Image (cartoon, rainbow, N blue to C red; front, side):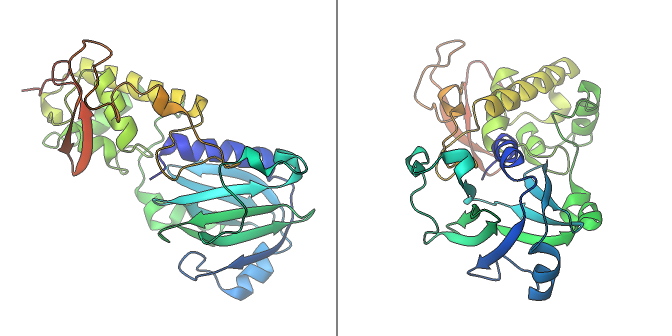
Amino acid sequence: MPELPEVETIRIGLARLLPGRQVTGVTHDTVKSFPNAAADVDRFLVGAKVEQVVRRAKVLLIELSSKYSLVIHLKMTGQLVFRGEQNFGAGHPSRSLIGELPDKSTRVTLEFSGGDRLFFNDQRKFGWMKLIPTAEVPNIDFMRRLGPEPLAAEFTSQDFITRLRRRPGSNIKAVLLDQTVIAGVGNIYADESLWGAKIHPSSLVVHVSDNKLATLYKELKYVLELSIAKGGSTDKNYVDSEGKKGSYLAFARVFRREGLACPRCGTTIIKTRVAGRGTHLCPHCQRVAT
């Protein structure tokens, strides 16, 4: 599933490509992916202009001049790929890893004035694109439950520690993955930040010192910001808004490096299971806190 850096990378691309464009049409292949009433689509989507593209946690919001927003959750295999002269230039679709579109995974196609198109591809059909009044977006159940953004300027180290301390009996990786505690963090960046802070993912929060948690806060911000700078982490399905791979995994210290030497101490990195997820760690650098 795309995590915060991947969704932010897509947002950055779409924020460059979409604002000011007018939606002239929309097609979709399944109501599950595009659960919107035809009357609402005709009234609030077709003919509206894109005002801005924003992100909350792992969710993208395309805000429209009609005072409605397209709320988009990519889930596990979702992609948003823009095709137009501005980002490819005439006759150069080969810059994208994605072939001709639409293809068999295309669920929704947005058409814009000038002939440009935005394709929502989703092989497993778990993602969705919902048209919702912009003022109502913060009141959506899952939006109301989300924790703070880890990269927000106002989210301090003390805020981070306080929120984790509310779950003293949980292992620290499970808490990092809990979107109600902190928004947007997934498996890759939980493993990477825990390695950076020398914290074993199975350690209970109650046994981790404030100093260690402060280091974890810095490491989490570091890996998230680095991944955004590298265009995210492409493992299987993720591509950016132009269909290109992200390169963060080439810089990962522990994730997907099982069997290789820890870049800090040389011990062989192992893969185990913590919080129901495949987990990468160094057994020497990361000891279970007691």
